[in-house]
Length: 312
Image (tube, rainbow, N blue to C red; front, side, top):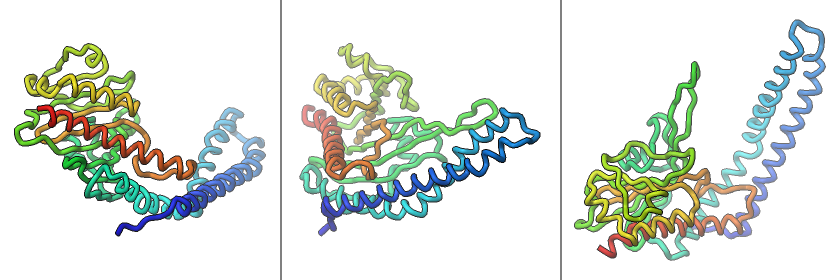
C-alpha cells in the first residue's frame, strides 16, 4: 500500500519551510544593510574614481551581495526543509490523491525522469531547442480509459547570439502530455500539427509540408494547422474534434499545441507552473485544488483523443 501523509502534517512541513525562507530573507537584508554601512563611506571617500563610477559600483555591488547572501542562507537554512516538504508532497500526497480520484489506472511517478530530447524532437509538438540545454522531469504515467499516457515538465532553450554575447533563450516551458493511442485502423498517416496562435509567442518548431484550413473560420483564426497528408488531416479534424480543442484551450487559458503521429497524440501546454512542485507560500488546501485541476487537465486532454476513436 502506498505511503500517505495527512493534510495537517504536510501543512506543518510547509509552514516550517516557509519560516526558513523568512529567516533567509531577513538575514540577507541584514547582510546588505551591514555592507552598505561598511562600504558606502569607503566608496564615497576621495579616490581616483568619478562620482558616477562610485554610484555605478554601488548599484551593481548591492544586488550582487544580496544574491550571494540569499543563496548562502537558502542553502544553509531552506534547502533541506523544502526538500523534506516537497518530497512528501510529491510522493505521499499527490499520487494518493490522483489514485483516489478514480480517473486513472496504473499510476507511476518518477521525479527524476522525463521525456528525452529525441522523443520531443520526433513528436514535433513544440520547438525542442538545443539538445544540450533541454531538461525534462516529473514523469507521471498511467492509463485513462484504456489509453496509456505520460506527462512531464519540459523546458527547452536555445543559445542565441546577441551582438558579441551569447544568451540562453527559453523557447518552451510547460508540460507535454503523450497519449497512445488510436486503434490500428485509425492511426494518423504522417504528422498533423495544431498550434494555437498567441501574440509575441511562437512555440512551434519544424512543421509538416501542408498548411491546412478548415471550414471553421473561428478555429482557423485561433490555430495554425500543418499536415503531411491533407486527406488525413480532414479525416481527424471533425467538428466534434475542433470543439474539444477549443474547449480545452478555453479551460486552461494557456497556449497549447497538439500533434498526432501514427498511434500517438502529444499535447503541449505552455506555462511556468510545474504540475508537481509544491509551493511554500500557498496553503495545502489551496494546492490540493490545483492538483485536482491538473488531474482534470489530463482527463480533458485524453478526451480529445477519445472523441476521435469513439466516433470513427
